[in-house]
Picture 1 (cartoon, rainbow, N blue to C red):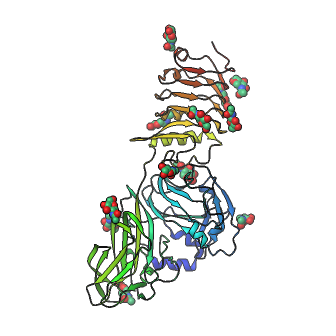
Picture 2 (spheres, rainbow, N blue to C red):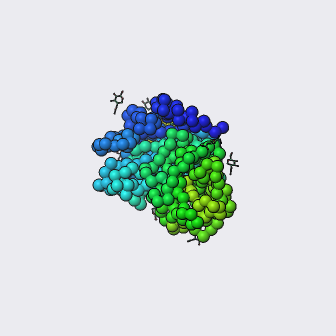
Picture 3 (cartoon, rainbow, N blue to C red):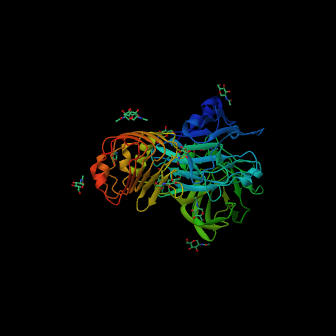
Length: 507
Ligand SMILES: *[C@@H]1O[C@H](CO)[C@@H](O)[C@H](O)[C@H]1NC(C)=O
Ligand SMILES: *[C@@H]1O[C@H](CO)[C@@H](O)[C@H](O)[C@H]1NC(C)=O
Ligand SMILES: *[C@@H]1O[C@H](CO)[C@@H](O)[C@H](O)[C@H]1NC(C)=O
Ligand SMILES: *[C@@H]1O[C@H](CO)[C@@H](O)[C@H](O)[C@H]1NC(C)=O
Ligand SMILES: *[C@@H]1O[C@H](CO)[C@@H](O)[C@H](O)[C@H]1NC(C)=O
Ligand SMILES: *[C@@H]1O[C@H](CO)[C@@H](O)[C@H](O)[C@H]1NC(C)=O
Ligand SMILES: *[C@@H]1O[C@H](CO)[C@@H](O)[C@H](O)[C@H]1NC(C)=O
Ligand SMILES: *[C@@H]1O[C@H](CO)[C@@H](O)[C@H](O)[C@H]1NC(C)=O
Ligand SMILES: *[C@@H]1O[C@H](CO)[C@@H](O)[C@H](O)[C@H]1NC(C)=O
Ligand SMILES: *[C@@H]1O[C@H](CO)[C@@H](O)[C@H](O)[C@H]1NC(C)=O
Ligand SMILES: *[C@@H]1O[C@H](CO)[C@@H](O)[C@H](O)[C@H]1NC(C)=O
Ligand SMILES: *[C@@H]1O[C@H](CO)[C@@H](O)[C@H](O)[C@H]1NC(C)=O
């Protein structure tokens, strides 16, 4: 059902405190690094990010006179090369989400760090806020991602190629979209990164509307000569993308008998596939016009009839490269016009670690304490961003092949589910404070090295270790193990076995 926008507006005016509730489903407005919730000038409530993130440290910026209260606090993460630090947000696994982080370093000297954004194991983009920072403004990034499970992870990645100090974030919006919004994109294979969302005929500031269920930012377009305002009468629900009706209250109109020629989006694009949506509504009541629309030298749409009720056209995958020209010609008496447009770059959804391995690692993680702060998000992906100590093989399936958690100060016990990581060749938990017993590992038929020395493990050495044909190194010294060494282990020749000097029952 389309929402009742008029009612939503009234509610906003009367009850600004309830405004946060205008977002449906699982939606989040997080003020990163904040101690308490804050309400912005539009009456939207932003919650502290603490419940959704365990890494990083919160702090307040020493900047006076900020118009946006969510910029006043920041969460900063360690400069740990190859680590990704993630927010985990419960979502509806069948829906898609608009993800919009905001970055404001508060100073342009030293140069703000550049880093990567990753959503559920998919590399999204590199963040570089230096230019915005010089101009004294915040940087917004926006993309649309499908949920891939009950939690969505949004991560900041320390890229060893260009991150020179820890990543940071000021605010994060994650808003559940209605199923029809941008629905021509195949979200099984692609996500969309926003390039431009423009309200033509608007020459002021970026605009956001109370009746936009998804709080989209509409940028102005610098052409006041052809800008007109409109007696708009557009119903949002008539459009799959649910544009707010107010976006139709301005337009760019060409001179009589001339085509409307726009250089838009305003930046050169790399040669790739793009999603393009254009929105039109006749600015005059009871009027209509017929347009052809070309993008660069290609026909985008022919004989489009535009009335004051509005019309949108879109291309799911349109190849663009360099600067783009949009040309609208009128086949009717009245000149061509355009009200709004959106362009997104399409990029592939990345692969994930196989579920069995990811679940096993989650279970191992739950039975340990004092673990590294980047053990969150996909354990292997994207490439170069595996959890600290985890090595993966990216074959037909993405598998975990090695765990090297030596000397990490970890305590807790070894989950029996480690036996589900059947591609493992190496396990080292050497020099930690593990207690409890060694689980049955006989399903690990590729295991070559098992280093558990220098811990506080107790119980007996499992008989089944001797049945792992591939095992070459077994280091168990300096634990509190008891009982006999299984005969089948002693029989295995060409094999290094260090039971250790405090092992009490060597037969
Ligand atoms: C957060 O709220 C608590 C309780 O109202 C208050 O004591 C504290 O000073 C607030 N913190 C900030 C940073 O405003
Ligand atoms: C999902 O995220 C929430 C909040 O961050 C967390 O409490 C919960 O354990 C996560 N669930 C899973 C399955 O990771
Ligand atoms: C760093 O750059 C090299 C060379 O361009 C590339 O192969 C590698 O994947 C990059 N690393 C990351 C983490 O992006
Ligand atoms: C998008 O949603 C509309 C409205 O439900 C529907 O008519 C249309 O077929 C959908 N398009 C795709 C590509 O799923
Ligand atoms: C707006 O549309 C409604 C129904 O489509 C119509 O009754 C009304 O007269 C229109 N208003 C204007 C100003 O055109
Ligand atoms: C863009 O890439 C496609 C193939 O991916 C190629 O056919 C085309 O010539 C390229 N266009 C430009 C302008 O480089
Ligand atoms: C594990 O990592 C440590 C350093 O992080 C290294 O010294 C050690 O050789 C590694 N062990 C294995 C079995 O790869
Ligand atoms: C054991 O781990 C601790 C940190 O937990 C480290 O300081 C120490 O150097 C490690 N010892 C060896 C022999 O690696
Ligand atoms: C391993 O995975 C299976 C399903 O693949 C699951 O039933 C089991 O509980 C997991 N854990 C262990 C220790 O086998
Ligand atoms: C091993 O140690 C744990 C405490 O860490 C204890 O509860 C358990 O009984 C011990 N098991 C054996 C076999 O000694
Ligand atoms: C080792 O195990 C024995 C017998 O279970 C127990 O008495 C002793 O306290 C343990 N030592 C350590 C250091 O855990
Ligand atoms: C170990 O080797 C001895 C002699 O070669 C043999 O009798 C015994 O059965 C072997 N034990 C196991 C458990 O393989």
